[in-house]
Image (cartoon, rainbow, N blue to C red; front, side):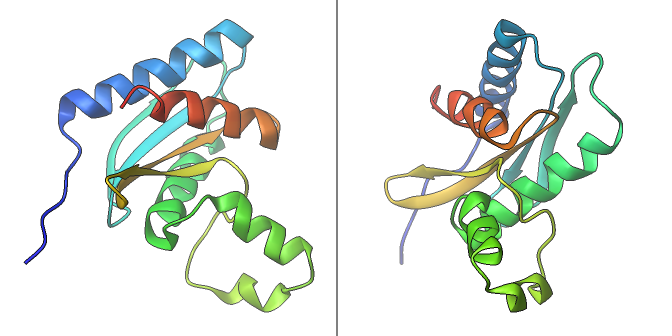
Length: 132
């Protein structure tokens, strides 16, 4: 039997706070979502000024990163590279900004960011998970 780490509510709060700090430092209005390893939403924070649709996009980016076990940017690049059949995959928001949280080689959750340019979403997501 294997064992692995799981995200606690304290971990989730740290991720949300780190994402918010990075976004506010850059004056970006974003939404951050955190999921468990199965892609189930643990928390969502929409900063002042973030468009309402960013809540769904951020949650779906996090879900896709958790279930796909890789950054959603990889999926976006596959599709943009011509592998359009991947659009029929049972995941949504295959756009940059979803990053898995990996502890001891195991995905324990993911973070999704929506609200700014793709590289900026990734920047905030990586800053968020760096606190763990």
